[in-house]
Length: 249
Length: 302
Image (cartoon, rainbow over all chains, first blue to last red; front, top):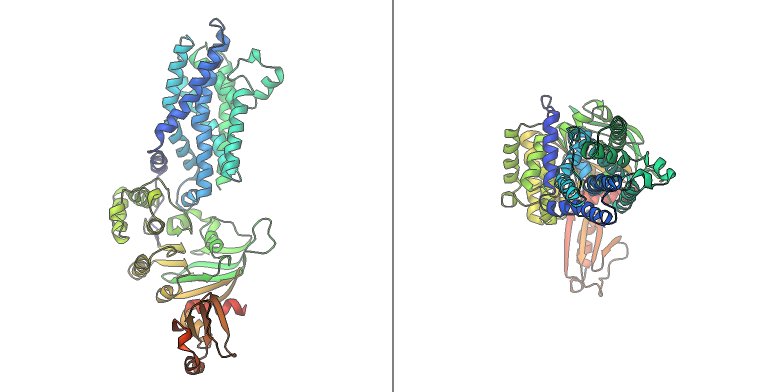
């Protein structure tokens, strides 16, 4: 037996797991970055072409909603497929027999996709501001807001991927959740254009709070609403982390 | 030292009425090579998945080093290398990366993990494909990689689910040589599921035979074989359209078209061979009882 052998320190575990997850994408990262970029850019072009230049509320919603879309395609969808793949290919069993902290695996998967989603995020911000003629007023709090937007969305993806009965069902569910999150609630469209019932349902979606927080740290003066957004996003993060850890156990 | 102590283990999958493992009890001692034999669906893979905490048991206990495995998951992860029947490695990592990361995550320092990677690459003759991603390997190469990954970090206990399936004879020989060497030189305890009965017989110390979820026999192969009444196995190969005529008192297992197996008592051998019309037969082979016969005997008995 190896009584002196101990598991690696958590930070080293995370570093190894992150390297392993990142190396999975070394042959396909170009396509993944392109896919995550093309949808929000096309939505900016399509929606932005129909909105009057003086309708600031709609223009802000289009940019913030497209950023959420970029984060959703880059994180929620990819994390969901990755967890479903790991579960059905036996990779999750491989990780489960190693002396690692299970929650770190989720963090590593999410971080790997987050790194891949950064180019898309930056391109969407730059292109959106130029195409929609918006001037950006970037608040330093955005450095907290972006991870807080990414993690709950990725957590929802991980929860779907780790629970679906098959990868096909997981893929379908992910698409459904992405579409619902984008269009049910004030994400791509401003709140004033939505029926009251849709606005109310939107409060149940992390995408609503993500869009609101992004608007306030990129385009609009910050209000006390940011506190509600950050608390809600943290709540969704804790909930999804708990769900995934429970499922992995 | 007792490594595993398994008592009355039962596993029933949700929605099924029949248990896949039914009151299984046995122990594994330090430094032994223990073989698990059984037909497909006998519950072998389920049993080993329970032993590495990948599947919860419905009832009964599995103790590792004297403690229930569910209470010491980390001790099991640190000390047991597991090779599943399928998959079990990160497909897009290269061979060298898979070995390094597994050894490092099993608690080795960076330097030790690099040395371990190089040692395993040599041991498994994988140096020339070290930078190949696992996804591009052939079935046989992938199985060797998964074996090497199970051993990375030198865990003192190995659980291997069919380590020689899909391997050509040369690689199969390499696997058995390496397993025997590991057991002899490092005292590694090895628990393995195999259908490679003839080779396994040279390596394993004790065998457990599973049939329909029950452990029907356990012991040293030589002791168990004494209970098979010193049977011999005669295998006949012939043109499928022209089967040979056999004496009526012989019990024949029509194994495949053109391939029959007949179990004989010692005193029946001479008479049977003399009675065969060699013009009707392409080839015949006579074997003393092997582990496979032992399994067939217990499976049909139960």
